Image: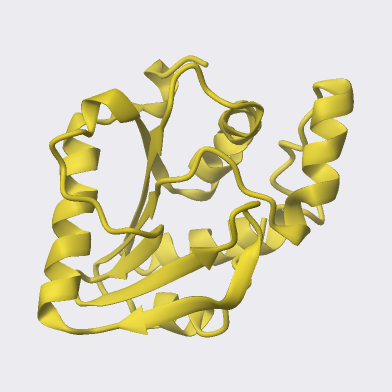
Length: 176
């Protein structure tokens, strides 16, 4: 699991208090996950070894970030019944938790009255927003990311994340 957009590691490294990730799509098709997802769809087996070549870079990055005192939280808004991709994500979330992330899930029907940004995003310390841009098939589009620091944009993304987080179901209690 890697974060491919340039600048992500640098933004995460500068976070002092929080790094939050809001995910809004029901499926992704990013290249670095394709082989793992295809294996899961064929076999039902997901790589959940935090020490595997697939997970180690992410686990190391999140562990070092959390060790600096930065809270890393991820909130996913999902349609129900969930897609195969969401089942796949859910199966691998144990590694996110192992690395030090906190993860919650919100059924989309419970998000109707939340003002959500148009794209997935990371928000660093409530001030810097990194929007992820995907094509219709869920792969990175060009450009795959956009960094914004206008206070109104940061407030919108932060408020959306916090509203989803407040209503979200902790991973341990969310079943697919």
